[in-house]
Image (cartoon, rainbow, N blue to C red; front, top):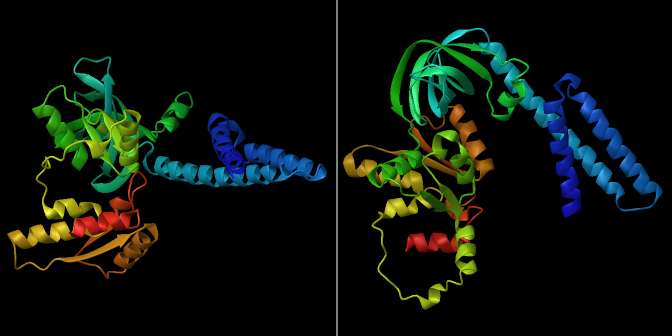
Length: 337
């Protein structure tokens, strides 16, 4: 199974790289090359009665997926650039990263845009000269947007930057990023300068979150429980030989239950009832991507107006994350005790 999967992934990634580095050829020329290569591979395998003919089919299927992904990505970028290229707009954004600029008191910054002219948006822009700010800051100002030129297009594409933004006027600091984990890490570093921040949990997706430039400066390491167990085993640490000690945390029951599906909504409901007992709190929870999609579809129809919606990608919640080390049902039973 591994070899066909590797060939499939090679077809997908190969086509995407070819389209990125050979933009003048368009998408269909690289696809034609992969299609012909896969077809010849399959025919050669059939002629020699070799099971390897299936690899050619895997290469073609991988190239098809690469073509679809490349097309959807390009369509998204084209839509963004068509909508904003050449416009002067008011942006609210989070500063992801900064480097020194040629002008004193200025920085070169990558911004994750939250609103354009006070309307919600999601794109990344690069500003060559912005008034002094730091990663994690939220800023506002008027910018002139334009599509990157051909010489910098590949670098911009690799960094996910859709447009260049030239600062014009009205710069203001709005505060810092509201990401819970980033704020927690930032608070710890303020209280304990020089400390190292490690997020340890069952969720592999937190590695991607920590790689964001706005979070990278605050969180030093992200480990799953599985990786942590591997480190303990590598150091021959046997917990059965360590005397029990009193737990070193004082988390509330709702806080501990966050990790199970429905736990976040339940915790919010309990806190609201503690402060405002008379308030009715309506919640609905979904687990797994299929249930989350269905919940959002129902919300669009107006069925859940006034509800707190909770969606967890992993069936069962975070306790069933990719990096967990025990069965989710066992974790749920322990939470219910």
